[in-house]
Amino acid sequence: MVQRIIERGEIESLDHTALPRLHLPEAAATLFTTRAARLRDLVDGKVEGIAFNSALAGYLGLIRDLILAQAEIAKSLTDADLDMPDQKSLDLALDHMMPPLAAQLKRPPVWRTILNRLIDKIADESNDARPELNAVLDSIRALSEEDLEDQANMILAQRHEEVNPAQAPFIAAALQVLWTARAAKLNQQKVPMLETFTLCPVCGSHPVASLIRIGGQSQGYRYLTCGMCSSQWHMVRVKCVSCEQNGKISYQGLDPIDAPSPAPAPVNKANDPRKYVRAETCGDCQCYTKIFNQEHDYNAEPFVDDLATLTLDVLVSELGFNRGNVNPFLWFGETE
Ligand SMILES: [Zn+2]
Ligand SMILES: [Zn+2]
Image (cartoon, rainbow, N blue to C red; front, side, top):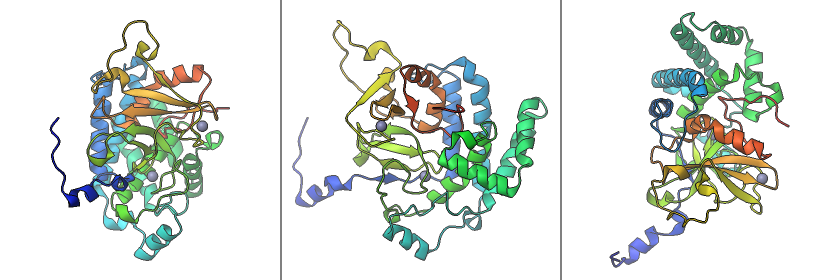
């Protein structure tokens, strides 16, 4: 490899501190459109690193309808809908190292309007063909404002025992639309780092999975993806996403390539779909989080890729680990 001479000024720009600690989401409509396209590829079996489990097809089809509805509604949101905090509140959040768009603290009521629009769209498409689905949608319509705010709080706090697993994906989807659109409007430089890496610095929600990114100064670094606002924040590798310990971390993949073998191990090259997804398990808290590696699949989309890799959840739970964080579109019910 040819090494070129680096000028003085360039050395400064290569400074390691330039590592982007946060990637805010792109415009919400674009993000949800991309997510829906990825989900179609997953269901069509076009994603090499993920052996798609056909038992999930019906469920993921519904999730795709939901994400397409999210994209359409995101397009129609106005600045008034986003109800962004004023400069004073943003400065205050920065000074106090608080998430500027804390989803647990102050929710613009428009999120409930978004929820109604999502429900109407899904009901239209269901067209009486899915009576069970329609019953769930009707049960959400029957909730009072207070019940809805309460469910939103329980979902955001991941209080399994208080969450209605059938209603939760729709409620979470409405929150995602508003929070992703709001996060996209922030100035990255004005978002504080929190004292904990286990919560989103933008909205204070839980991460859904982690991603090793490629490209530019994020190359090879691990980012956690927020399950609500889709922001990605940096966290060092080989560290538990639940308890932040690093002493008993190991990795579980789906492929026997991970098992020791007498045959010479293949060279660790990029674009090996077998290495795309792993579970990072922690022996200290017995939790795990999935880690996707963009080196092995450029189109990585942690939120939906997580849903499509349930086989890995089953495998890791059989080894005695619990999911550290919930995917808000999939509630397993009670865990110990
Ligand atoms: Zn967030
Ligand atoms: Zn842990």
